[in-house]
Length: 336
Image (tube, rainbow, N blue to C red; front, top):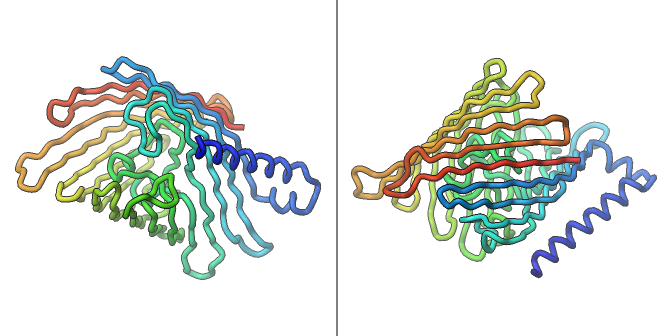
């Protein structure tokens, strides 16, 4: 309860600060509002878990601030703050930063400052809470949506507190990060850490190719990964792929993901089909084991404030004799 009250206080103070800045008729107001976007975000998600025959809910309310600081001649840096008070109801196997499946926590999504004022080919310096530099998830904004990639199942973490060096050039971009392994906590309670890096072609091209490396210790489990990701666009269609190989302690891990997606001409409808594969092989094990699942989803935006989504997740094959699951999720999101 103490943590919840503290985070509620932070959110309340931020709201008072923002209202003061936007209502004051001062030079501070003008300077702060230049290159600024502040959005408040409400979402509610219902999830049906089969064969459990149970329905869980995820509700979130928060803010999304994007601010570019600049002078008359150049940019200084970009501040992104995304904080969400999140409530879980009847959610099995929740993320570790929740106490259980019926809990309320203040969640940091992207919460960092990227210093971009160094000249020439020197890197930008990012500090705060940011997505781990790895794979498709690093180049596509899926925060707060049903559509996700393999960060958590593959790496054990999606975003973390730390620092990185990054830059985008005409022919390539990169990010190299070192983070604490605490996930939502600034300082972990153990010896956790995460090192990650991705280098790739510019993300706004029709063909985007990336190479990623990753090493971490999370909850006393050592992970190492080498991955390749690809995005290819033709007309309104997109084809995505990601393959990674590595180890969890002494267990060999192979991950693969394919996605086809379609965006209509007005860009207010998105349809996608994903197929993901995971195989494991313990030391001395000849056969190993594998699992295959599919995600089928859509997103519809009747205007620039409402976002309606649905997704069906189905296990096609599972490890050993684990029961196959079907998960149906729907979400309504309102941004203003």
